[in-house]
Image 1 (cartoon, rainbow over the protein chains, first blue to last red):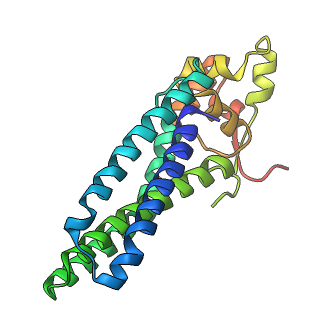
Image 2: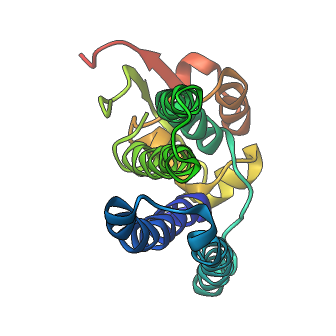
Length: 139
Length: 73
């Protein structure tokens, strides 16, 4: 498994864990109370910090386990990246358009922000999964 | 998705005849990872035209001696 493949797996798992926990914590109470951006600012910042810290720790571990593995992306890595981008870009696009629609109807900013964030998270996880499949099955 | 490419190759055989050149050696000479050479050998990835020419050049043969297109037969 190349550095780029391991990096993709690590970041996909970290992304899913961090934002899975975030949405699991934030969404159920918001459904009851209506949701407030102010109330989740700390959690949102915490999720970003965990994501960055998890990414750094994950990549340090990957390098420690295979110190001689080149970390640069070659043509296959770039091709797999482009394929995944092309197949998942519509997810964020769909969520962005939904958020614009919600803004036009003056929806709660909490839900507008979380539709956008959800689109980003689902898009990134889908991208990571598609990359992982392409690495294993071939392109 | 996941279907093997129709491009076949003789890289494994050519490496054998080049003093058992390793995948890592070949990868280093054309600027890709060992995993990419492995994917090419297994028909899981079709290299760019430039990489294909570089691979042929490493073995000192023509492109068609390394890569063939179509079903094996």
